[in-house]
Length: 337
Image 1 (cartoon, rainbow, N blue to C red):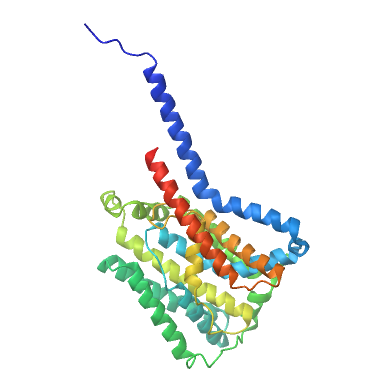
Image 2 (tube, rainbow, N blue to C red):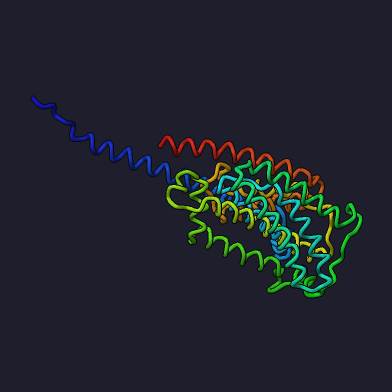
């Protein structure tokens, strides 16, 4: 005698699956768009509270200040999605600025070519060591941080020589504007769009996600794991050097005291933007929101006036800790569902 089946069981199973799918979509959206939501809310509060925040000049100031950090965070996004980390970008940033200012005596092309060549080579060395010797990215890029900072101090006589930008075209790039928005903002916007297309649409971008998800699985699928790792560190080095170059153009000199802690700011912006430190997930759009969020916080601190700017680091650290905890919870929730 057979056992009668409950006709409602399939319907219950289907409903449970639908609920799990809805939960997964909601959690995924929060993880990807959380920084954007906080940025919008904070901006609306600032617009209602501070009259000076509403001006176009203030918005342009935020964008110009965010341009170099955006480039560094762009490169860091590629690296972190693969499951790596790059601690050398702050030192490459200041090294790129010093090299660009020195090379500007030979013209605009030299001012860009030298920092890109040197910083890209250091990024290449990082990638080769990490990909082919399986050394920890933390150790390799920490060594590069110290080496790049030492190289900068060597060519600037322990920081006592400040090279001035001598090429007018290079200086204009840092201080000129189009539609009242700085040239460097347009340059960074173009590179960000290219980065978004590469990450979302190209085979290289798909390889980055695959490597971050699981190196073993990516290798079995035919993904060039080592080559992908090398290239993300090359890109990180190039973008850090370029960020230093455009900052030197803006300041008119290669300032030697910059860059300290910029790697941590970049990591904070990327993680706040929804990229997982464990790799395999993240978007450049989220990174943009993370960089702008930190920029708006700094601008609001300046608007208040009587608050020490060091509080930005406190707030950034609190944001980062909160986001990491939230990401950990969201990842566990998605696994459960």
